[in-house]
Image 1 (cartoon, one colour):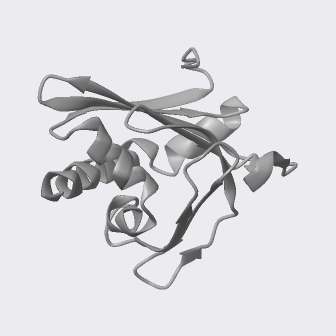
Image 2: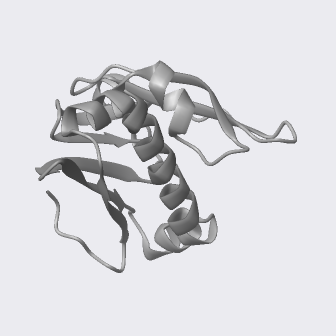
Length: 156
């Protein structure tokens, strides 16, 4: 795991009453991602995940008034089932440099009793990008998404 730099990084940590393998499945199955990845009333209308290093990670979202964020295909950096999933928008699939990027996500799942310690660490290249992510609603948005993830995982 990368050391946390509070000037560049954001993090969300939760205990979720589900097994690490279930949370992994929610992160890597495109049909499941569509059910939890962004706060309602937004929705993921398209998702692609090839959960292997170099694979694609893409989520395309739509807002309640038709706003769209189609995103660019990102690259999976690490994929350890039930343990770790990491991706970035700084690279395209196959580790192709993009020339730009906003963030790298490192998601870890650690078994803890009957549940999982869920940690989402989001790395940014600049303090300005970190601040922009905060202003976009990182804490609320990623928090709501984590709640939706927990609710979905409870049904699986």
